[in-house]
Image (cartoon, rainbow, N blue to C red; front, side, top):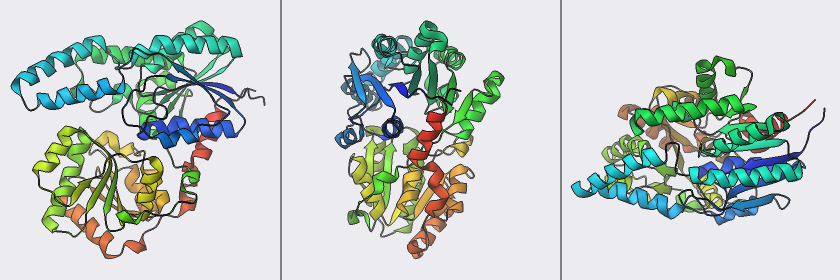
Length: 423
């Protein structure tokens, strides 16, 4: 068995950009380099988000070669400005009209996503690197899905001289909210390019078994060409950390609150208000103005927002929390979805309150590891019962680490590397 340990990784969201989507490619890079792989990373010079986590830069291996390219994609400040206009549009009739016009323009100019302006630069740099260094192995992760267009062009240029793995962190054309978020003509464009990605890539990797099954059921010819590599936790992130006891009396939520997530937390907030619990709900992460305004209107004085913190600080808070909170969308598609944070919450070995659809893989995982209580997101009685059980005896919960070792990032990276093996 011969393995060519040179790889080109095309990653749009890369440190110091923060939030959960950065973790997956960063950990793959970290552990590929640890196994002796020479890694080239192509990423935009101008960051696509304003949420930053400088501490993640320390995890970039010294041996990795980072190539920062120009980009015409939306920069972080522009993305935030669009969100601001959207919020203002919900407050004013005039601004609502402007927002509808801009959204219609967005559908026409950016039919795939707002980072499509990075594609030509990423392609040129990647083509040059493959030619110069004779790189065979190519890894591209999405979101943004426009990054996959680089893979299509590279595959047309180099054909079988490269082996391209397309890493789907989301379901793209099968996203539950796609139908309500974009008009039919744009859905057709997305379906066309998604299918083209699947035809041109050598391997499609999906982050959950459900997404993999959805794709292989829809495209019968995909069978044998797909893999599932879930998200996970990095044991190294937990070494020598001390619990942050500022969360020791709180229900801690680490994550985003916008769109669907805003609706997800409202039943819990109302239950906690009705129960008159002496339990603060501490939120670290990101929240959009719509969600924050909605929560403020409800006068949930036990809820406090502490902004975005570094990944290490978030883990320290999770280690110290009285209870950790996990939120999953309440729909059929989410029954097979693992949230990115759930594995780190399991590793933290603190009690977990998980809220989501009536059944699903997270429910099974929580119950199998005896790490917390699971309740249907829209069943107040079940939420109240779960909270009471967790608060009455929090020390009776704790995940057996042997049961989750398969989700260690080091192990998951070995599975990715195996896809590139050549006999």
